[in-house]
Amino acid sequence: MAALFAICGFFYLLIYAIESPIRYILYLGGKDSLILLRDGLIIAPLIVLFAVQASRLRVHPAIISFATLMAFHGVVLMGTIGSFLGVAYGVKILINLLFGYFAASLITSPGKRMMKIFIALWCLTLIGVLLDKFLVTFPWVGIKTIVGDLTVDVSKDWQIQDTLSRRVAGFARSSIGVAMLVPLLAIVLMGQIRNGLLRAFVGIASLGAVFLTTQKGSLIAFAPVAVIMTLRPRQERFWLRLWCLTAATLVIALPLATNDMHLGHGTGVFSTESLYLRIADTWPHAWDWISRHQMMVFGVGLGGIGGPQRLYAPDNFNPADNLFILLYAYFGIFGLLYMAAACWLALRPVTGSERRANTAIALLAFAFGYGTVLSTLEDQVAPLFVGAALGVLWRETRTAFTARRVAVPVAGSLRAASSRVA
Image (cartoon, rainbow, N blue to C red; front, top):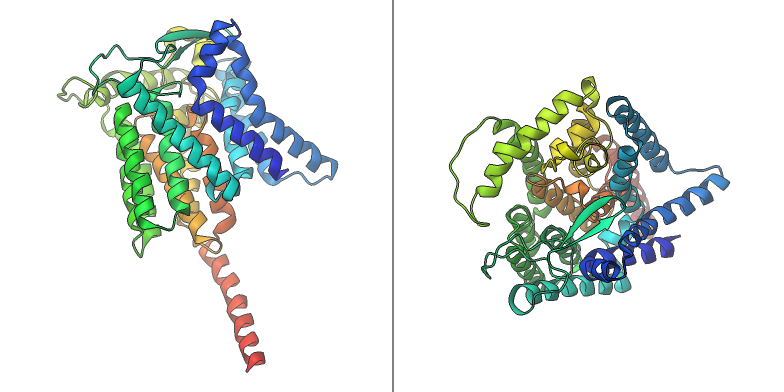
C-alpha cells in the first residue's frame, strides 16, 4: 500500500511541476479534459485503501471522520446553494488532505529514493523559472484551455513585459504554482539535510526562485521558515511554532482588521497594490457573498466560494484570496475550530521524531503565512503537504498529560535496565 501511495504521489507532483507543457500538448490535440485524470492518482489509492480496510472491518478513523465532515458541510451547501457539482468540486479540493495524511512519512521524511525525486522536482522547477525569466518565452504562455465547461489560463503572462517585473511560472501552470511548490519542497529538503551550507544553498535558491515569480506573499511566508531551518537554533521548534502561530493570527486578523480601510499604494508587482486590491475589492466582495448566502454559523457550505463558484455562480465568482475567508465560507465557525486544532497539534509535546515534527510545523507555518493573501488550500499541492503535516503531528506528538504518562514508564524501564546491567 505504501508503494502505491508513493508512486501515485510522485506522478501527481510531477504533473503539477510540469503542468503547462502537459496542458499545451493536450490543447494541441483537443483533449484538454484529460487533465482531470490526474485526480485519479489521489482518489484511486484512497479507494483501494478503504476497500482493503473495509474487507477487514477496520476502516481507519481518519477516513470515517473526513467522509462525515465532507458530508455534513456538503449538505450545508445543498441547503444554501443547491449545487451538487459545487460539493463535488469542494471534495476534490480537500481530498488531497486525506491523501497527504496517509502519505505523511513519505512526504515529510522521504527515504533515499523519494529524496532524489524531491531534489529532481525542485531542480526542474528552478530550471523552468530561470528559462522563463531570462532565456525563452514558452509556447504555452497566455493560452487558455477548456476543462469540462471551465476556461483555464495556462502560464498567464500578466501583461507585464519588463524582464525584472514579469511574473513567470516556468513549467508550472502559474507563478502561484512555483511559489507554492518550491518552498514546500525546500522545507522538506532542508529538514533532511544535515550540512548547514547545503541547507543555506537550498533556502537561498528557493527564495530566489520565489522572488522571480514576484509572489510577495509566498516570499514573506517562506523567508522566516528558511532562516530558522538554515540556522537551526537550539530552540528551533520554538521559533517555528512562534511563526506558525503568528501566521495563523495574521491570516484571520488581516481581512477583518482591514475591512473598510483606505490606504495609499504604489503600482507594479513589488508595491502594495495587490494587497490594496484585496482590501478594497476582493475581501469585501467575499464577505458580502458569504453574508448573503451563509446558513447561520455553518457558512455557505463545502465549495461555497472560489473555484466551485464558476460552476453555479460564474457572475459572482470570487477567489477569496485568504485562507480564513475560504475556511469560513466552507465551514462557518467550524473553520476557526479546524485552524485551532491544527495549531494545537503544532503545540503538543513531541514524543516521536523531532525532525519530522519540526518539518511538519514549518509546512503549516508556510501554509498559514501564504494563506494571508491566497486561498492556499485551493491549490492542488498545498493540501497534500498540509495533510502530511497534520498526519505527522497527530502521530509524533501527544498532549502534555499523555506525554508525561508515556515518559514515566520509559524512564522506569531504563532505570530497571540499568540496575540489571549493574
